[in-house]
Image (cartoon, rainbow, N blue to C red):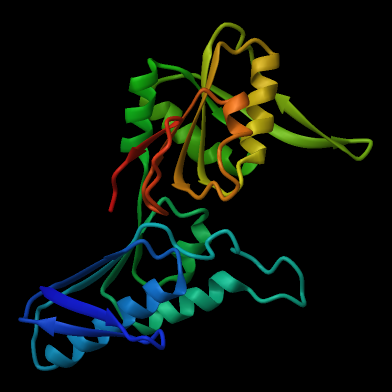
Length: 252
């Protein structure tokens, strides 16, 4: 199925379907315009195939906007992922694929959704480094990182940030002296958490510290990260990056 989209000067997006057949829309999905573009494509496809039977429609979102807002943080604030999921559900795709969602909440809120996991890309980073220890950056990431460690048949070191007398402290459970470490997580916003963790790992004797994230935002650049992180592996699910410290795997 071929489709065309365009954007008017006032910001409106529109779509046109060319031909008939199954529909597969692939978007980064890291902004609201992407979602409206997908909705326009699906509306045009529905209209073109209103009398057709047996055709299927798939929406693949590589970096779902708002996925970290997976709960109502305060009673007076909006539940943003719920709002976004409701909009996606109005498109009525037969299947919605989400690449490495931040949590299972997105899969629960979005109808007919399925996870596209990041194991392949983490394995590529793992093998390129040369079998490092995996490091889980916090309790929330531990379950997923543990699964990856089991698949790779490698060691896993859990870490967590705690507060002692009001001051944050990183706890690392295990011996990493003389070893290469690979921190694994889903999203890097600014990257300060990873910088602090890498610093703590180096202070405990890690030879080198690497980072893998699927969704690479890095909104504050790489200068501070370079001090403690030797190299970063990521996908281009959020944006394309050209930096010496980055190895980027193509998903879209």
